[in-house]
Image 1 (cartoon, rainbow, N blue to C red):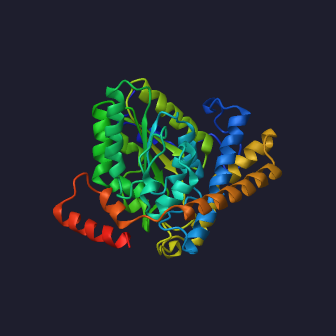
Image 2 (spheres, rainbow, N blue to C red):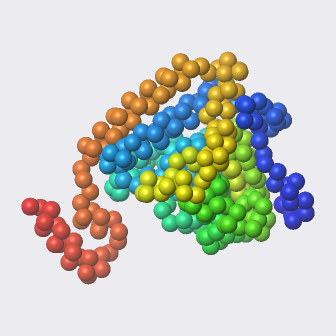
Image 3 (spheres, rainbow, N blue to C red):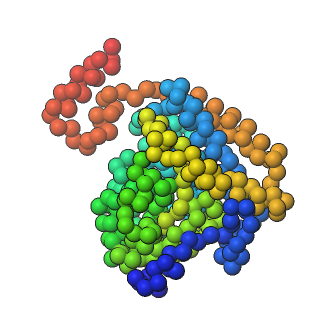
Length: 360
């Protein structure tokens, strides 16, 4: 049933399963996950938090290029990806590299992407994904197109895409959800509302009470989820996927989350626009701490197990960056060749000049 403008506040009440203390507050909505699957979710969140910490350190050492921190958004990112099947397509934004890694992108290729190497944008066979989109919101129109293609080919799969709260101010956001809605394309549009588009607070992005309610204008399903609650995120995405493959159209999911670090490592200073009280408030909602409490209460997670994950992550990250360092450096001629199918005359001349230099 499509949403209407009636009873807006009640319709878009935040969906939650685990509260900040790790207690179940919505038993009826609990997803059917085995203990092993619950442990796997925790494993991935802990691993990704360590990956974020190490990536920041590698960036500061000059061993990585562009990097957008992910700490705080693990539940939002990994809960959505865990609800997917391998045949589903991911169209990520630049902060959404973790989803690609857990969908099958080798870690060393994720590091190559950060360095701007074209191999980092080449998805292995069987990994249905596009490389992270740098242009804000562009992935929304692309996702609508990919989803439409899946529908036309009779595929039993969906296309999922991500943007931040600032991305909802872009024209591509509205065009994407409107097109997908008009053609009932199997798309899932995720808005990771981490409260700030770089330094601009969400209340200056829109006069709407929620970002989820923007789904109404496109005639599609919309839901606001506690983005620090991985079970709620997973359940909402799983339901959205079912709607998509059953021909019920796309879904817009707003996840209320928070990035603990800067927007990117390219000079952003979050202390200029975020208060210490705000940081402390959101740290109390930490998705890993919350889920840890829940799993420990069930007796299926321990400090020793978490430490094992941490050590494993560190070793694998160390090996991956070593493999990244061993890859041949990208040549200017390779950059030119990958930009055009048919080179214009001025680039043909430049390519020949660089080819001669590279051969020396």
